[in-house]
Image 1 (cartoon, helix red, strand yellow):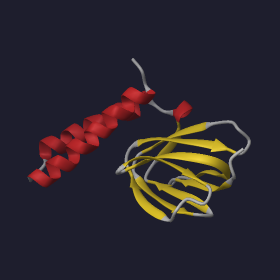
Image 2 (tube, helix red, strand yellow):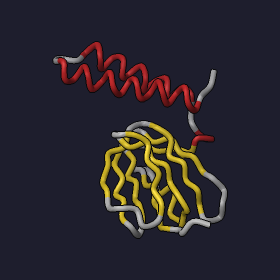
Image 3 (tube, rainbow, N blue to C red):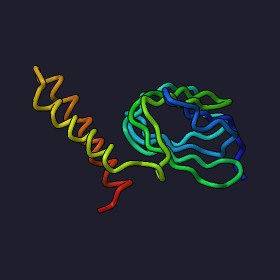
Image 4 (cartoon, one colour):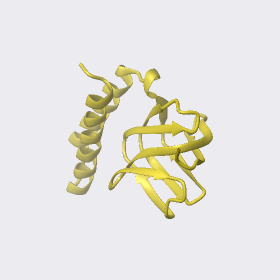
Length: 135
């Protein structure tokens, strides 16, 4: 059994998770990463994706996050999400709305940097949609 550590998932609306866990898989901006007890200190931005939490109790939980950042220390991990919801509670219409807004942001982009950022966000959203909402 893996050593447990404190994990908190916080969104502007509420605290979603605050418990001892064995591992957490985070969709970091540079790629997916698994956090375990005594992880080296890291701070990373979060891209839209799924956070998988394995509590010490053993019941795996999955949450969709839409950006934010994670502060990882040897003693614990705090993920501050721009928006987060349990995968079981995800709303297909919300994902579709976010994708449409990202497409509009691409069309309205004033420069290449803004367009590139909007295209990356759209790609992340469509990948997320495919991962959690199969047709």
